[in-house]
Amino acid sequence: MKIWCVIPARYASSRFPGKPLAKIGPKPMIQWVYEKAVQAQSIDRVLVATDDERILNTVQNFGGQAVMTPSSLPSGTDRVAYAVRNEDVDVVINLQGDEPFVQAQLLDALAQVFKERDDVQLATPVKRITNYDDLTDANLVRVVRDKDGWALYFSRSVIPFLRDVPNQKDWPQQFPYFKHIGIYAYRKPFLLQFTEWPPARLEQAEKLEQLRVLENGHRIFTIETDYESLSVDTPEDLGKINQILNEKQ
Image 1 (cartoon, helix red, strand yellow):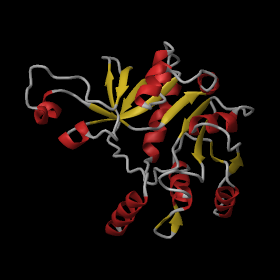
Image 2: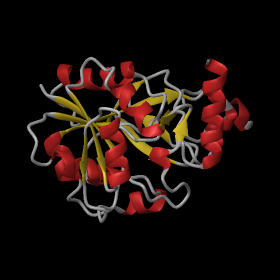
Image 3: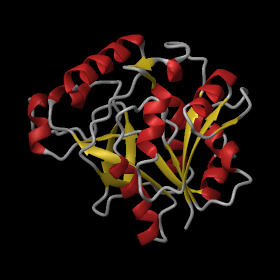
């Protein structure tokens, strides 16, 4: 089984233009993500899919592999699909280029799902919510799962609603809530099929691409992780990441 990790990285961003090239310590963010991914033992190739020659050149300069994709592609998932469309690969991990501290072990765990199970077309990680702030933060995505780990729904709202627990601050201790970590692993044919579907109503309502899968009658398998996502969406986030790095050093 051939497993690739593809990192979509575009230069244009309404909140943070040039984000993949922003420096975290001495290195651009895209290099941090790339070097974490190549540490995963299950991944045969790591590839950056970009629409900007500055990102392409940066990746090649630090010894990484990158490919150009059209700037007209509507999403990172479409960029990943374009990069692998003619490649001999079985499973593709879509790793966002703003996860500089991603764990290689998490990528290996996602890959392992496909080695062990034939019924999974798409897998993604989730993390247990233990505090009230994560429960109510609209920037985080909650997910409810069935007893076997299949996702039932993803939402920016708090789900489920605990009717018999009036104080919402008690909810994380009364029920196993999970937040979604936005890393996806696809079987290649399913990835290509997914990008052919038009955006779905639920996806447009919540602005969550994974709801296109559920609304089209397919399933998403979830794995639980202790990885705390530290993604960079704004220059303020970058400052926090650099502060964390300084403290670690």
